[in-house]
Amino acid sequence: MRIYISVDMEGVTGLVDAHDVQPGGRDYERGRRMMAEDVNAAVRGAVAACATDILVNDAHGPMRNILPEDLDPAARLIRGKPKQMSMLEGLTPEHDAMVCVGYHARAGALGVLSHSFMGHEIEDIWLDGRPVGEIGLAHATAAALGVPTVVLTGDDRACAETAEWDPEVTTVPVKYARDRFAAELRPAEEARAAIQEAVTARLSAPLPTPAVPAGPATLRVRWQSASVAATLPGIPGVVSTDDRTVEARGPLPGLYRQFVVWMRVAASLTNQPPYC
View 1 (spheres, rainbow, N blue to C red):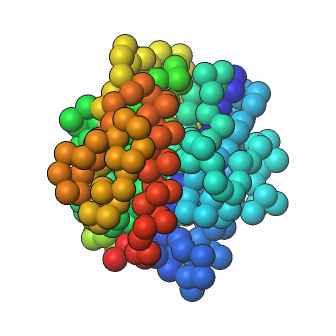
View 2: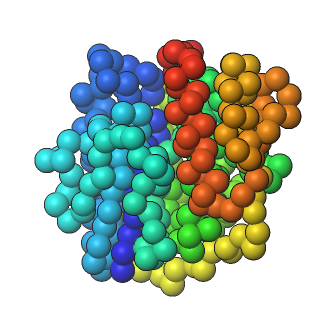
């Protein structure tokens, strides 16, 4: 059984603000250790369910948060950037299931460190007209590859967003949002035990077959900066729908890969710190 684990940081046990998750933040070094411990709990759960191959993708920010020596040796690590598939780098149809660790709610939701991919630079995203963030877009892209998302960990708002998108995904809340930069925390040992148990239980049960999209999807993004929306139509297939919104149509996962290019263009045009 081949398992893919995508690890973000905002939804990790104990972390609540930018100082916890941004390099240079006063608690970042602690935060990256907490990130490693959450993913290690998922790795232990997968091993207990007889996974034979476990690939972990460091999917947060600079994508070099997890120190290789801190990762359980039962797993392999993809680290660094750029990556053509960003948060889903290395995911292939050969994987039997995807686990998402440390994920967070989409932009506009009152979840811990909520945003969609680029701090406040991205205001909204829609996939086929449905509001979506990192959770839904990762789930839909994995489904297009034939890979089911089976477990997600994060705060309670991320778990609720996941349940709205796909109620069959097992969710593990490791903290409960009090505001965007405040949370009631589960004790770390309790949270990690819950992650491990959930992954083992879900991978030990029959795995679902995801509904693979039959045709192309439409991805629409509303940016904070009109400069981004004015530049992106230079990419074939991208059209403006208003001064700050662009969209494109195509099959996943190719559309996800194109979206990664959009973000690189946006990063070159703006210099906005996230979580403002």
